[in-house]
Image (cartoon, rainbow, N blue to C red; front, top):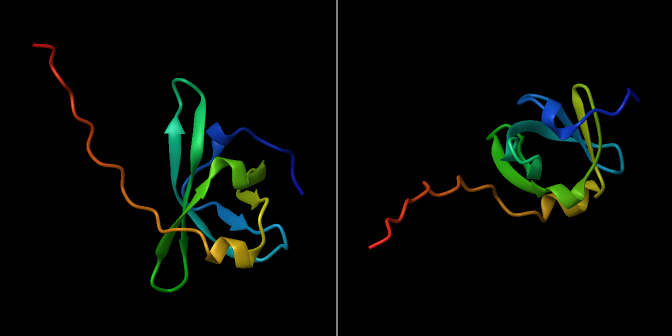
Length: 95
């Protein structure tokens, strides 16, 4: 295993591995606010049809360059929900 790195270093295409060392897919998107250093989770693409699952940050374990290790096994990963694109932000004006 390589040296751990910050979530800020994660890039799309990095490999995602379960706690039981099964390759699950690749990072599709990093969800968070880099300006405030808030890491919400990852969108991970899986399989031939490239389904996207959302992994909350609490389930992300060690991060090393090129690979993200999860704290959950492959079976638990399969039960995670799909990743939906966040809705566009709306700005409200004070009356």
